[in-house]
Length: 446
Image 1 (cartoon, rainbow, N blue to C red):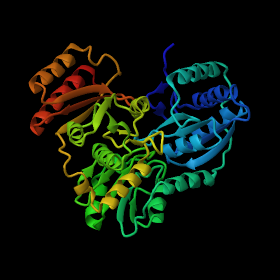
Image 2 (tube, helix red, strand yellow):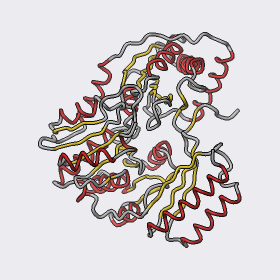
Image 3 (tube, one colour):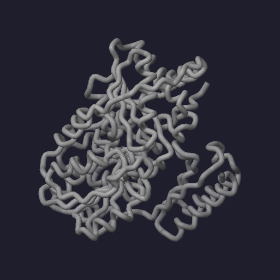
Image 4 (cartoon, rainbow, N blue to C red):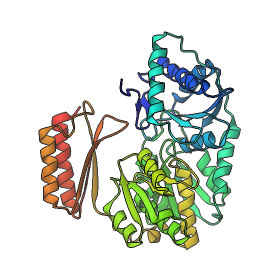
């Protein structure tokens, strides 16, 4: 039987509905507990969550399942995904569980598992756990929750780690941050304030239902206005679980993951720390980034979309820097995951050391016009097997004649087809992306 629960980023769905209904969540805890207990005596797992209202009851069910197998649990409470990964890697934990649906609306949630290495579980282990989840579900066990208490020391440890990675202070820096009413809402303001920055924070009033709601890394308009109105030196927005960050320059210009990779790669190369002079990104990376890196004598390697694939290629090549246009940036010297807070520290440190702002730091990145359209579909299969869809994509590729790119794929976490078109002419890009999206909507739309 193939995988049915685990997707590209753990198990994700609507909280309270399969596969995040109470029996299945509890079965997940039991299956993970069995997987760990058979290999480790006195095993311990750390659990963290973002600010969604469903996070607590999901955590209590997971804890109940784990403890039924004799696995002890420590609960970090509200913490970022990379925070859980770091705690799992550096603490006495055989595994870490993050309860989050990242940038999705509040009604969704998810279960992401890290091994003691700090990496996501390999597909083979996910498959074994999944099969055991099905077995537990057939046993008709009562889904027994366990009361859990937040161990605030865990978040403190992670905060101290972040502070330890910075060689300079940010005194005199005026900083606007948007925490998306998510996992970073306490961590981020404290982190930058302790480094001496003057912080103007928004998206720091979570109510369980407003995570990512018109704020955070996917909704930058408010942060842009704040940066310009406040005369801030830098702006940064995090998504719901803060594994990614998107920046705003003093002028109000958006600085995405491509620009962060360029600035970071050049700084690492200049200091002799860019191993192999290579950067790993995805098929979504703008052609402008590839050309700018090439001009700096840096090779760019592309992978399928997903930080999992970026990290795999980084490990294969021994690369120290990789990431995605969406703001997942992996600094392998410090982390095994994308980390929005760590990315902000690195970028601000680079700019501060150079004595420039983000406008100047990324001025020579010539961004090719790129359009991304999401189309909700009935089911995620047969995308390129539809003759009309395949024909429309071929038509656009032929029209570009090598001067642009077309990428059409399914989302790994939502029932969406993603259409990306990139080229030299913005009107052409708009027209071609719209025509492909309309064809998919007509043939496969929900």
